[in-house]
Image (cartoon, rainbow, N blue to C red; front, top):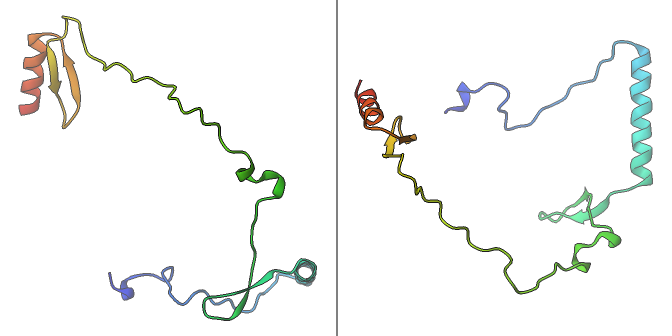
Length: 126
């Protein structure tokens, strides 16, 4: 599809935010206070500087596993023996079912009498 047919939600340039407006001075003061608290937290716990592929430094957080939860310390147990046996194939051994018929597309249904087989065959052609 062409770009001129798409709406504004499919923007490749990102979203540009304008000046933030508040309903009253109280909300504006609260927003400024929250922003100041956030900046203080960012200063207290700075992000590690990492070189990007372009060569510029950028802020980035690195998550690591705590030392006491390192999964490499506890290898899984390998006894070398298999514990499961192959299940026997499920085969119908009775004598009541005549066969299997296809009703709709690939819907397989059991047929127990010749009359059911005739009903299914005429249902598909009507």
